[in-house]
Image (cartoon, rainbow over all chains, first blue to last red; front, side, top):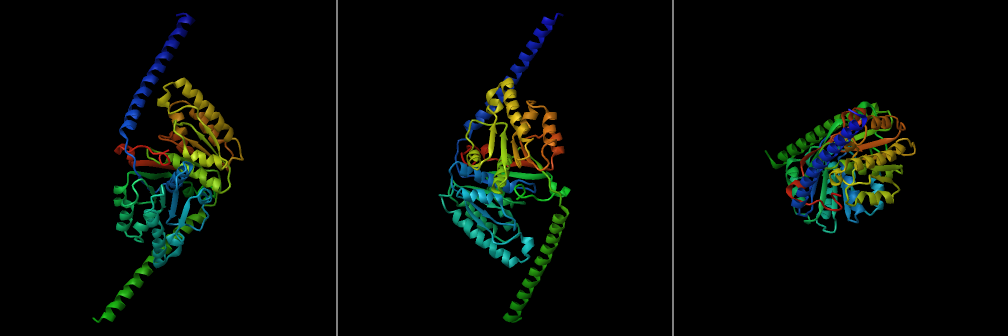
Length: 211
Length: 211
């Protein structure tokens, strides 16, 4: 076979490869387009980010950043707040996001159930007000799940307020071990699972990254 | 038993409960404190957010918002960019974050492998420059995983650049099906798994929430 013949064969093979790639991608596009055409309903989404992995609250705050970037009104209620400063808050409050932070640290820091319950109630009162306000496009209830699993808040009250919120209001709930009834009520649920974590390998939590 | 006796018994029971709660929380606190004491190393973290669930990119952008809130320098390279506008970008660019966006849409939109490869190369060139710049505290490589799994970028080049970056630089890689060698290199890996998704129930992707 001459060099020219070899070259021609290679070219033909490359063309066939490109055609096959195009055919495969056309099939993917057809599938995606059909799904987009079928999805026509608009409504406020209840998104739950649960599981033991890193990234739940961060994704919640990312959703707030996205909403603000679109000129939407967003609010945040943080149900467990360490004593560390929180970088997201600085940026987002500057962009007009309303923040309510539960007045105690992690529950294992306070070791006082009555005090924790009172703090949870106060934070939940702020959440309930926001869950009735149709001008709030997006509400992040950060670490809400623990309030239910530690019995600081009654599940029924939480479900009622979520269910009766303005129909176009999006809500994001984060935290480990989300109660199955909240998962049942949610439209979208992601479980963040830890594959590995730097902290377990002796690496310190670092400002501007971990908090 | 008189009312007073009953009352006293109830009070004692409550006190015992509070004591038990305190003891349990003290144990949790001791465990957390010991872990914090053990974790003393500081270094640039490679965080991988993978899996098929919603929230990977959003957590990536949330990490960028956090860094910016702490006055850190952050940059973003987006490897797959739809034709939709991105709310996060508006907010974060306003806060001084450098953005590089791959010049094509989803790969199933273009259906042209040569064009996609060229676009991936151009975006990767920007990433490589940022991965050599110690003034960049945090770099988000959004949807990088697809560039490797679709063979638009060579795995070895990606690994080399990640491995040889400035020692204090944090990098976040997002996208489905992250290559096992990148997971191996990472310090922290979370897998976001879909439990359910509103889109599958016929609900439209909505601006300010989904994009």
